[in-house]
Length: 242
Image (tube, helix red, strand yellow):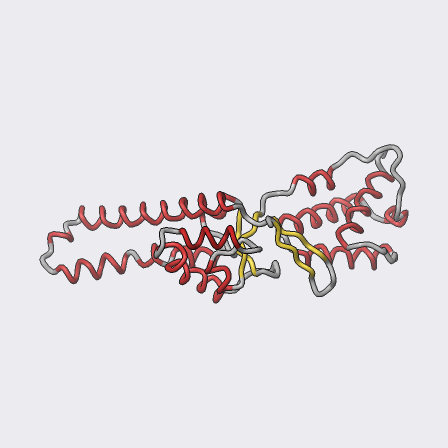
């Protein structure tokens, strides 16, 4: 299972590509490389200012631990402020979401961070990796506890091809009402549609579909994403020679 299937309350089916184990390991490695570099930097600065020559070991240890707090809370803080992504996840184009595909909460990020102690550090990552491999939605223990999953946000080539594929001469227009749209309308529709898929946000697609239904005064008997895609193709086919 490498996909997270969501059926929304509006009966819109969305499919999220789950992040691969390799991409998650690389993202984790990048993040903890940053943490280690920060820790070494703090140690070097304190050494250069001669703090470690102080005979009060408790003062030195307390100050050093205080300065290491940002590193300790780094995964939790990054995911909270960057909507499910750390530096490593941004580079690898993956992110944490709820299992229903929506944005996770700060509490869920916190639960994932706390559980890192169990499924990564206490057993050298073996428990976390085993859980990712064994569970349906590729969840480590922290994900199971927080009800989250990690998805890939790399642009899907199939969607890219759908948006920008050439329309054949045999193409038949389904909604002639698109003639009432302007070039600006069509370009905006295409950009919003593309953005909805890039963000994995079905609410954007659904809102766009509902707006087009009202604007064109049609009753499409198809899924919202199919309807929007056909409207885009109809428009560019109708005005292809203009």
